[in-house]
Image (tube, rainbow, N blue to C red; front, side):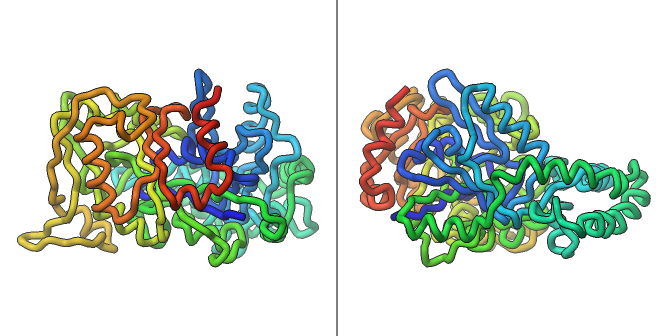
Length: 449
């Protein structure tokens, strides 16, 4: 039995979807535990390209069961659209999906409020995906949210009225369109309850039973640790727990049952939306930042917005590694750095004449800090599609070792391109322990069609 967590250690967009897809043959179940359709996970294999927002990346494999945990906020219409899109491509969801009855529902009123607030912020906007994620979590914390279990309950109309009473005055103050009346939402909610019924269950009980049966479960995080509601660059964060600790509250799994945590980091750093970004390369159309954006195809999977790009921040990644108790690293997009003469890594921050080795809690303070860089030689050789560590130039291998030491965890996987088959699977004993007798299946999955 193995229970493993995959989480991002930056501001999201680290390539978690590819890593989860690669590892999925080693697991019977892939479960999400937080976030909603603000997530965007991309899976590429051969000439196929799939984008997932709500469903776990393991849905691509017909033998894998997929779980949406109670820590998520779910837009039923978006889930339906995603499932139908997969089925048009020949991927049947069928009876493989399990949705927590305790997961909260994103309503049209949440989307209206999200958009109105972001519009009102002007230059100070957070950069949300405008999909109602934050307001849905806000209603959950305010104890007037609507859960999947409530969609066919007798008191649903009262819950809808309670939310309407909270949201309508604020929308009016913001000059936005009024929210739909509770009576107008009721019929849609009833239809959603009927559609979701075959998949709705108590996920905590289900996972406990599966664990008792010896099934292997992989928990797939969304966004990244630096967007965590408590530990990220607040208030420029998401509204859920994005670290490994989120599994306990977002899926009902006791922490002691987790066998290992894999942290995913990009070989450089990116961020979408507002917030401090110490290593950002805002160096013009001909600069390195734009080079990384073009070569790395750095546009948001969910929003399509161009991502801000910068050098790898080892201080932030080290803090994220600490928060999730990361055992191993997966390093992605190494090939994007192929054409650079030199590569920088932030190893500390500087404020005045003082060096700082930790990520400050206040976003305003982080924004004022200057990065302290270590400069490493580039390699100017093509690493795209490398399958062995020995295939990499010496400078690229040295860069990997440097990041291992700077972050404080060994690298077990290296992505050398966007497709599943473009991955270096290192012969690491801890990875073999976590994958067990299915390590060979993962390697075959990488090499297969």
